[in-house]
Length: 327
Figure: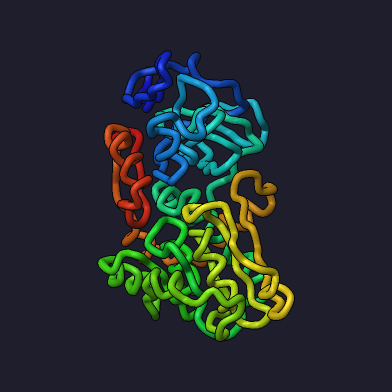
């Protein structure tokens, strides 16, 4: 038997989450059984834990949209007992049981070998948010980052924190957008050279084009903010859009795309091809400074998760919450 955070729904549709004990026979089918060491808390996890269950499609359910650990048993020749692995995406923690348990069973195709130089704890300090941030940075690089500051919105959150640290480490000026003034020193510690209040973006005029200000952007917010900043990107620059916290709508015009050649790059971390996942994790191991990573970590246990699920939905979580599932 081992511990897991189990979410259940009653006949009236009310959900509840509690740490319980389950066995190997309770796990869903898969090729590889992993002894989970660490997971994280992401916005989707908050939706899965919270009232109504959010993204969960079946009950009972173990949330946790990513995890890192050690292979315990495998029916796939690519993975042997003792191998260190990491998993992000593939609807784990939403449809398939996820990382908030001391053991997980998944398809081998969903896993990636843990790169040399990263521990399982560090991998989950990066987690899905950091993996997404690296995908966004890679997309900007592939399209060419223009001279000038690179804007990062939602900078104090998981994606924004890691994107800020990576871009600064790569030598870019980073303008970090935040709605929480108290996070300014934290963001400067990650390498941001400029702190931009959220209102400075949102309160600009509704003209489709404004002065060219940013050489590129990692946008973790979406909605109205994304529409505003499109008109501020330099000619031929790109926005890597990764989040919907500000809503799925885009009240913008085609003018930034037509007259300035702005590229809007959608980043989906869920079903990335294997080669791109390996590329991103190897880049994380080489281009994310570990000293900056340590400043993002907030430790947590399985017992902390019901409250943390609520906190992240309220925007009250800073940096990366790393869940030690064996604590």
